[in-house]
Amino acid sequence: MVTMGQCYYNETIGFFYNNSGKELSSHWRPKDLVVVALGLTVSVLVLLTNLLVIAAIASNRRFHQPIYYLLGNLAAADLFAGVAYLFLMFHTGPRTARLSLQGWFVRQGLLDTSLTASVATLLAIAVERHRSVMAVQLHSRLPPGRVIMLIVGVWVAALGLGLLPAHSWHCLCALDRCSRMAPLLSRSYLAVWALSSLLVFLLMVAVYTRIFFYVRRRVQRMAEHVSCHPRYRETTLNLVKTVVIILGAFVVCWTPGQVVLLLDGLGCKSCNVLAVEKYFLLLAEANSLVNAVVYSCRDAEMRRTFRRLLCCRCLRPSTHESVRYTASTPTGTGIRIMLPENGHSLMDSTL
Image 1 (cartoon, rainbow, N blue to C red):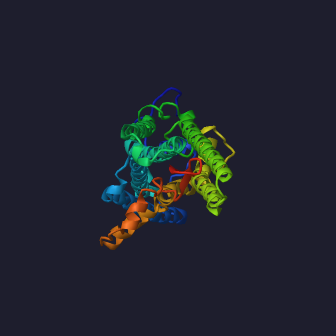
Image 2: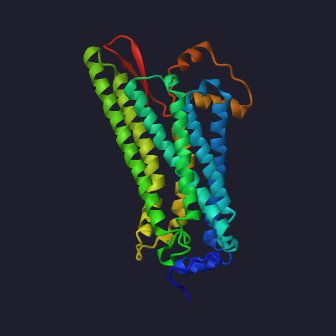
Image 3: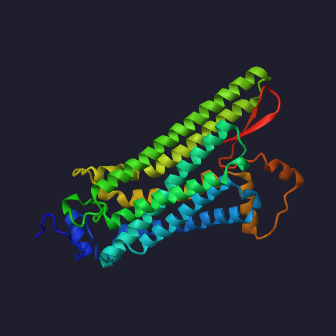
């Protein structure tokens, strides 16, 4: 018999799953095997891809600059997400019932911390790009202290959201507040997590929209002072493409999961969130793979470093490549925006 106000620290995982109405299987079902197979595949790809990004940044001295520290932090957060999801895959299905309450909170905390760090780093990168573009500033001039503070802030926020459920934001003493997707967590935690991610997305939209309109105005003013060159139009179109890729990847990977989290957090009884939760979590994890492609693999110098690492041979860059590197894009978006001032000397502004 469940008593209001009583705490259930000594109960089993099955007790909380039964309370929330979430099925706890005692054997491997076909859909469990499909989820684990897909999950292991995605996890391995996430680990290998982000390890390659970190190795590239560490081995190439040209990347030892503040903005690349943010890209390295994104890769580290996504690498952590890959480890967390791999841990989940080895402790899911029938193995969930054998977890202790502490083990379940560790499994959940790893996911929450790593995914929060990844999302927060995406916002930090957007903010730094906005500052650099507006200041028409080279990436090498970004203050290292500022970037370090951003990275520390990201992990403080991530650890806070990841550790809170195990210490206070659970439903072990209030069973009527338990969520269905995560039967040991309070529904309010899921709602706050979903709304926080939505806020991050809206801020990213605002930042990249402002960057786009700023660059478009600069390109239009340049066209008034110098002969119109097809490259100006190409710059604008490439900028639109990059912004769509960045925001589109976030929407595709995160929106489905955030919607079901919010519905569960708001206590929607008629919403069948349990039917899709595992697949939407897998889609969110896939964002850790997409990030490496969007933010790093589209950088020409990064791709050259990847080839050198994978081929295990030193490719000596030509003098021409060394000179051109200073104009390469530091954000991994693959676009360098040339902004001539009054039709004369060129100034660098990168997205």
